[in-house]
Image 1 (tube, rainbow, N blue to C red):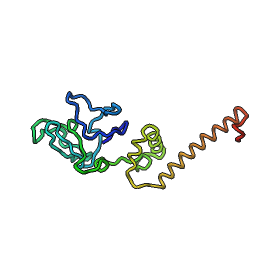
Image 2: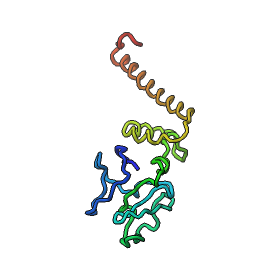
Image 3: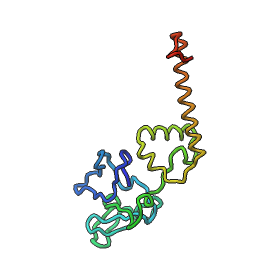
Image 4: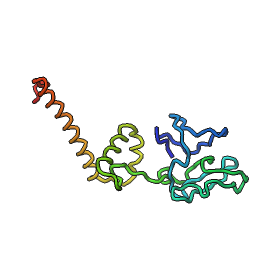
Length: 176
């Protein structure tokens, strides 16, 4: 479980005692454990009072029911009250549901939308984009993404020189 803003590790963080919202200790971004999706049974949600572990069984790996009395101490808890830990020896990547890179993800989104989302994610949060690369490589899809970016760069760069020639009649260092 990592911060969606700065990619800082959020496992094993207790909920604030005073009922305040949890925040990432690195960037201050607010979060709740229910903001994340986990693999069923791979994450241990520990009671903040007695440390009894519970495992999410919903589609998102969340606790069901949403609020219940702890079997050990009897206090009422929710998943957002719990300390979230990967199940015993489970690696972090195995505990989290996979989120594909938008360009590689299949779905109803068109190519432009998937290209735009991947490009903006790369510019704004490269660490998060890198953490999405957990699947086997898809060389042809990556090559298409590279080709699109190269064509855009050549078009914009070439357009600059054409406009320079049209408006000033001169060239940059004898080019064109």
